[in-house]
Image 1 (cartoon, protein in one colour):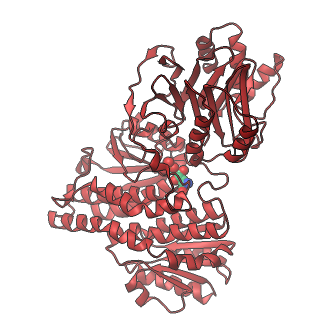
Image 2 (cartoon, helix red, strand yellow; image 1 turned 180 degrees about the vertical axis):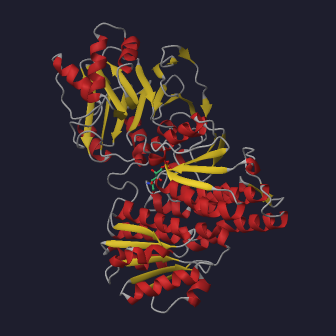
Image 3 (cartoon, rainbow, N blue to C red; image 1 turned 135 degrees about the vertical axis):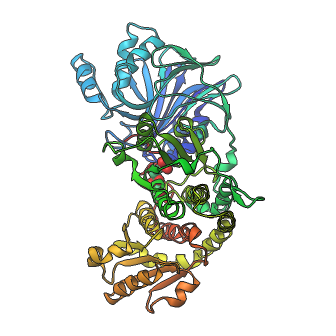
Length: 605
Ligand code: M6R
């Protein structure tokens, strides 16, 4: 979603605003703009489309300013035109916004009735108009608070006021906003990555906070107006983490990062020397009656794989639900249930709301997150971090396998804690899990085999993914990956559901990807494969060497992943479906890392 940066600097900020916005590109955007205090007042430059368009504007008309703000816009209200690009202006106010102002229509009507003229289609402009109105009778900070008291919704805001050349104001209600502390310079940003090149000392604003930064530092206030301290933390990050290296896309790099990301993650959840699980956080799995997993998109699907692993091994019921449904359907909850939010960003609005819903009903909470400074990580009882490094590609890959790694370790730990396995079996399963990074690397080596299918799949209008057991959520993930970056319609189904409807779609033009390692489900999946082929369907069969030996003849293509214990099959079988989506998207010339309409971090409902 929209990216925000604000700099109270001691030297020119134009290039630094752009550098920061480039770091925020991963969030997804369709226009961009910056503004700064120029010699004759506030100046702004905006462009539709990618940042290179804004850079072209700046090449012809540079901005001379040492205090300024920048924004990448992911359109919600109004198309992605120059006119709707942030920063927005009204009178003395220039501001940028991430989120949605829910009561903008009534506020706009009120302001229009007072004779105020609007020049954009956005919800954001009402905030600029409101603040400008309040400034007529109030000092900046007081006017800002009065404005915030009138708007409803989800927002992170950064504001400049004409004449206040050493001041930026910020506010957070929902989408995150951080304060960066430099040497004689101060920053506001959507996340720590935004200010990464300038400082690694950041404070996270809480919901309802607002802040004033100037060359002397930051003053933070709670919603009530009471001054408050938000601790400054040192965040580890290096500019090198953001580089693609020799890869063409972040997604390609992140697929290849998986063995290392999973290895680091698994190392944090097992005692490698002792050979047993060592899940941090002290959760007593024996005392739990149920686990409720909530998440969105790929994170939800990782949770679904967790259910397939935890329930049979630990005999512990696990419910998994997309957070956007869960939060509104008044689910029946009990305090002896642990809620586990899964989220790469730790900021997804629906997941956060579902988590808070459970907490409000007395449930203990945990979060499997990548961003350890995120809102979810700060609000839960137990943080279960993944250790795969920042994920930049909008399509989640290495976060997914790292999330599944955590859930696999939890399944084994819970099984032992609940007396369902003995120490010897725990040792065996931990050894299996520690094998996963090597086998994932072998799976990634199937790249050439997968690439050879990409051309044919790229011509398809629809693609079906089928799987049974833990391969079913992986089939859903394969379909999600393919549709989000290649724009080909794809659906995942439990293979057993084939005859209950989807088989009607089978014809010679529809590739059917069947995920079936040689496990207890194999024979049934092979039967489904025969049924598809009998109807002219083009099967892409993703299996292992044993499965290849036992497969019915006639699969269009067989991709043979390494043989592994069923415990880690979801980890080992993930790379082929990720690579398939990747190479199909490349074949189609799609924007792999920033697919159309998508945002990396969805901070509004
Ligand atoms: O940051 P989160 O893990 O909470 O994000 C959840 C989804 O938005 C995310 O997984 C999305 O589905 C990805 N684009 C999938 O590749």
